[in-house]
Length: 188
Image 1: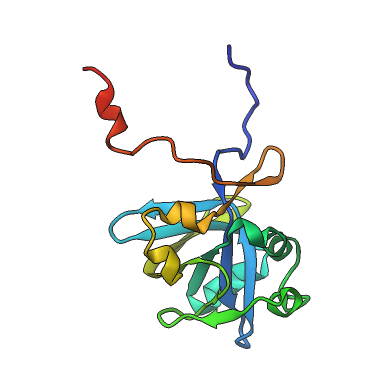
Image 2: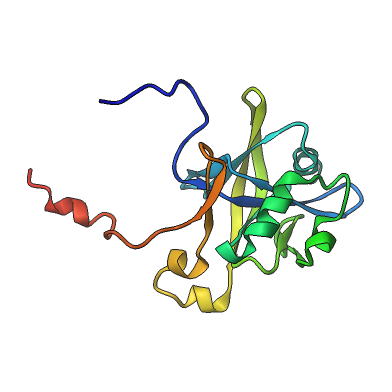
């Protein structure tokens, strides 16, 4: 029997998105966000929801663009740091020693060391409550060359995932089955 947990912000898995923006002066900034995901196939779009209190929120509105860098598990300290500090107070790239890379297609930086990057132009925003959902059209995806040649991007990237119920980071697990195929074994 299932037991009610009440209305909470829990879903599994939750991504670890490192959202990149430039501020008004052109300083690169990043923040970690977990409320987001793919939200449309055509055009290809990604959403990320942020509180107005964040520095990144205002940067996205100002520049009409953002990137999402996906950190691998080896960068868990840096990804967490990006989420617990504000770009108003310090240069997060300088503090972590990571490299801001200027996108060639949108007005936003990404984290050069992270293996997978989505470059988005702001398509629209929707105020929901405490958070505003930013929908970005994916203009390009950058991936490390050795990852690109892999059969499984997921296994090569080794992305972090976030567990909101215990405020912890995890790695993606092992292969289970091939999608759009294993279900065919169910008898009609």
